[in-house]
Length: 401
Image 1: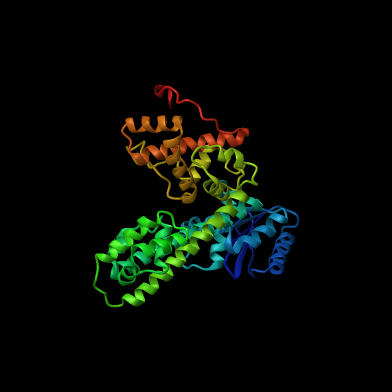
Image 2 (image 1 turned 120 degrees about the vertical axis):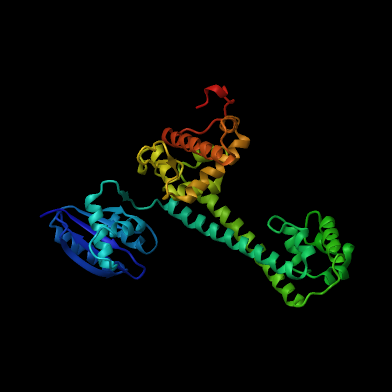
């Protein structure tokens, strides 16, 4: 019997699986519900169809609705290849017919797995890496919610009390948020006065309470006109201020969970030894690499996934034209970019490298990206050798490569 390839077009409630042989002939085409018993029955049917010959499975999702099927396949010792949905979309154009169906997509997935040798094999996720992926994704959502709430708060205040909107930076000032939970209008601030407001803020353990009170009352003295809708707008501002404070508390709790789980990882000490990488960025690195560097094979491959390895864009007589790849992990790029920005200030060796790139005529962003690639190479070597990073005196700038 020939070797078989099983392509799966994954969905939320149902998957469609198509099995083909070495000639590309369909041996099975079946829609299956995303339930454990139904998926196990599908796996059993495909293995029975192969008569003991190897089956290569391929799927277009690596998480979400496909997580259960991937877990069942890896637990049963099956090889699973990941084909990104974008790759399937572009490949579909080379197959006959303009229509799009789940069955056609599943066939394309199976056929691409049959022909290609560059697809990545999927493995069962490490428990720590999976936990960190969940926690860091949640933190990203919370940070986005906080930004939206602050922008909405400022926009609402601008409509009825622009002086107070300009008085504080609500992204960083917890004191200003506490103030807004009770006093949001010029009249209310003038009525309580600077001294009583200082006492009110002091009782709530606000730092620099006198300065906060003086700034708020000064803003109130600058406006004596009540804008239409002020009362309702003030109530909305108070609610948004409480929402931002609640989000700050949840972000702090999530950060504590991230740090605790991250420190359980065997590479945590090595990663934290790199200047510019703290628990949150380190957790992002583990979450988006799985913590297993053998999956990538080399630092160049990891740099390509992170978008730090340029790819050629040559045509005709034009050569040496490099550009960033279109497909890369943006959150992994953020890890190294943010760490490089910190390292350029705190690490003497990194600062010397950054300064040399600027002296060569590169802009700030280009120099940071170059440093980020260098940091990636260093981190790769440290994890490979099981060593921690040691800060050394900056070498001779001429010798820096």
